[in-house]
Image (cartoon, rainbow, N blue to C red; front, side, top):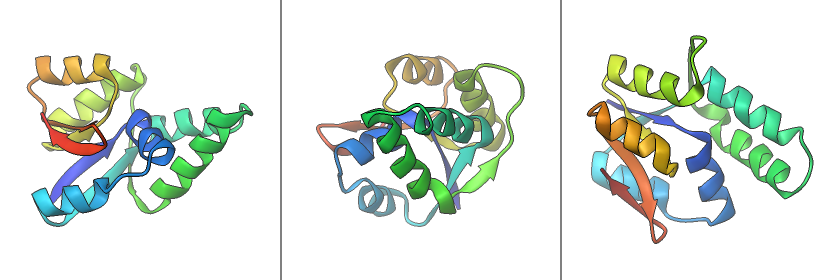
Length: 122
């Protein structure tokens, strides 16, 4: 079963602008295992406790990811941990962060992003 590691940017984007992302992924891949790295969860928890609109979005994103499998992180930057974990496990990374997308492309890691509200594999 294909693993997809989710970045906070992707989760927050689908909370802010609901899409058919889940159905699109299932249609393209069949069943998949969603994964949230511990450092991404910590990033969302920090945003959730900060107050304001982004705080509410982060709380909903955490709730959305509550059933995802967990993955460990080292001490590197979150983006570097995402690239490393994907390379090691052969997983895809779901993100809308252009900097992370560029790093994934450079590392030859497949990614899932959103374009006009639709899932796109790059």
